[in-house]
Length: 452
Image 1 (cartoon, rainbow, N blue to C red):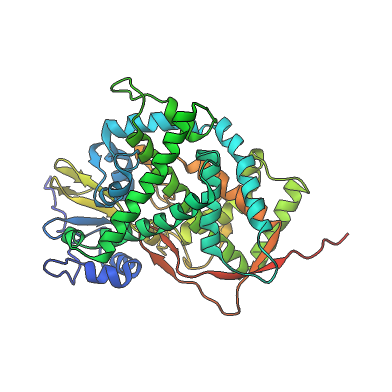
Image 2 (cartoon, one colour):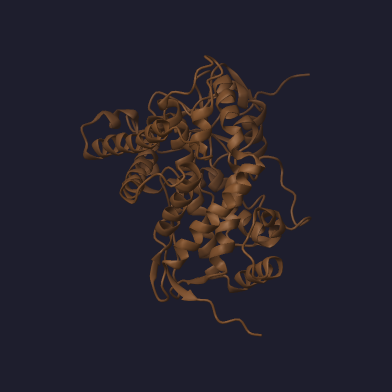
């Protein structure tokens, strides 16, 4: 039998010397990546760093193969290298056995009993935030959700040990760092070495973030008090290789990972859900009816997270239509077979959840927000077509924590206030390190008095 060679991997048009595809990405990275899916086949090559190859994987089966079958043998790639400029060697940025060891160290913090304890904390912080909103207020929803996510994070990770000044500074610096990381993914490495104000801002913000986290770690170490939070857990953990306690730098890296994953992504998903509910009153009504039936007048608990199927479908639909990931990378360490193609060592692989989840081949009428598309029997997806938390050995460690946080926060907010959009208001996404609403301002309204 004669083996037929696969077609060569096409190269996206428009690459420039020294810049690669940076101009197209800078102008509109989401549209650029989406157009690759429309114009090219299962694989297409782009240039993020001149002199290197980045192959964008666009076929679900190949994405599944990359994340699961090949996952243990691949390095993390460019996106995680840039994240490593802030995080250092954390569970997110390392690969191989080092990733396995770090994952085991953090796993206890995400057990059911721990998450159950966090729910009461989350609900208390959401209630306090909503109490600070006033009817008629024009609320910057994305900013409010980031602050709320950070509030919940500081209580579950630091037991509230960050004072208000440190908290506010941490928020500002994290925003600078995450925007900078997003830009650095798109631009060639040589731009980072230029004496530009943006580079100086990134360095100053990164150092300030690590200093804030480091101070909290030092304070807890010196107090000798086990507060039962995630930070206390890491202080008790030991390095499997040396048997010694984790260093402050190791703990700082993991806490920063939790801080970014637990604020940027969660805040964006909550913002998109609130936006879509305001645009779709019938969907909002169904959510409120379900909350009334399941919870009656009592607060949401951890046992309710799986007992609110419609709200969970709303969240799944937000993770589909508005996924926060526009680029995730891996890198081949040795010559690697991906489908019919053989890729040399040192090839960056990338995929885009935001674009993948909007493919009409797998999601009919993909730009319509339809939670019922997730009803059993409505659609059958190939593995790799919907990967909200990734897949394989590097699947998000905090997926259950994130889902619990989203359900708890949304159930609490929606039973207290309504958030309304101005007529004909349309919100556009912007993608830096994550995809988020560019501007989302909504009006706070009191819930109408219940009828008896």
